[in-house]
Every structure is written in C-alpha cells, then in structure tokens.
Length: 262
Image (cartoon, rainbow, N blue to C red; front, side, top):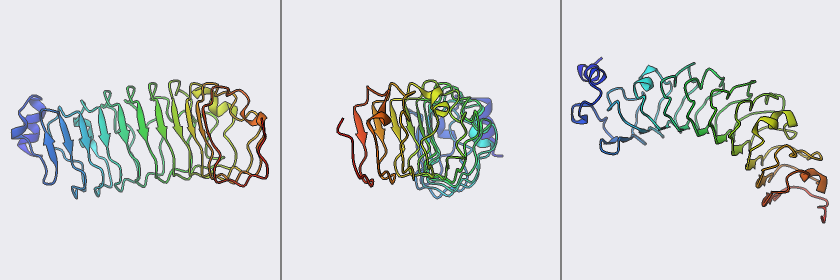
C-alpha cells in the first residue's frame, strides 16, 4: 500500500496534487469528479482523492469490486457499467450512504440480494440492465428505501424467477424497467402492490402473449405503459382497468387480431 494512500486516509483534506490520478483518467479536484471511461483499468483505483463525489469507470476491464470502493464514502454517483463484473460481494457499498446513483449495467452479474445493497439508503437510481440475472429473491431491494428508478431490463428474469415479494420496500419507486427478459405473464398484484406509486412501467420484449384483465389495477398512478414486442394477440378494455391516469400506452409490434374500440 503506497504511503500517499495511507496519508490520504489519515488526512482526508490532503490536496489532490499529492494523490495519484491514473493515466487515461481525468481528475477534477474542484468538482470532486473522476472520469476513467475507457481507461483500460482492471481494478478500481485506490489512490484517488477520498473526497470525490462522482466516479465514472465505465468501459474498462474490471472483473471484481474489492474494498477499495469503501474508501470513497462521499460518492453520490458511481458508474461501473460496461465492465466484466461477475458478482458484487455482500456489503460492498456499506460505506456509500450518500450514493444517489449506482450504474452496474452491462456487466456479467448473475446474482443480487439485499446484502448486496446494504448501506445504500439514499440511493435514487439503480441500473442493473444488461446482466445475467435470472431471479429476484424476496426483499432483495429492502435497503433501498428512497429508490425512484430501477432498471432490470435485458436480463434473464423469468416469471418463476420474479418473487412475489421481489419489490418489497420500494415505496417511492416511480420508474421500473423489466423489458427484454423472459417473463411469460404480467407479474402478480402481490408483486406490484409495494410499488403502487409507479408512474412508468417498461415491460416490452417479453413473451407475454396475453394480458389478463385488471393486470395493472394496483398501479393506479401509472402514466406510461410500454408493452411493445410481447407476442400479444388480443387485449380487452378490462386489461387496463384501474389505470385511468395513463397518458402513454405503447402496444406496437405485437400480433393483434383485434383491438377494443373503447
């Protein structure tokens, strides 16, 4: 461990001029912003200014997140998208209690649990799009009490893999992406009940085929619903019962034989 890193831990206000900004990274000490996009990194840098608030390491070659992330406890945004992450160790973000945006999209993550997100009580946006997740266990997101946007699109989540209590605790969720998964039916009322403040639901590019009557009725505040490219052949007016606030409905690229006139 370098003496600069040890000194930075002892003296948090140490000038960044003494700290190491990796080659191909841009470190702005005034804005407390570090951008290492396409920096050919295979590990998270450990000798950055510990007071940084934004850390972007997208499009690199990182395979694991080690304890180095915990040294940046002032982060409000962390972007690790487009890397090679296979798993996120439990409590990795335990010291990131100021983090508001976490981007882990387009990696190779296959499993997440509520232990993954311990410490993220202020998180507003979680992006897990484009991973290998095939199931969401009960109460996975319960530490994320302020979450407003959750992107689970382009994964391998099946109807069986989406637990009835998968979204428990997400009382403030406004935007949910479940598109491009392996869902065969719309999730149950029990699944949607905890997120009844949802305003936007993206569930396109699944193999739904049928939308049951009242499928979204617990989502009374829904204003946008996207069910494009879902192999639907029929839909009735009763399907949309209870979502009178809906302003945008996308049913494109399906196989409709008829669409109700009212």
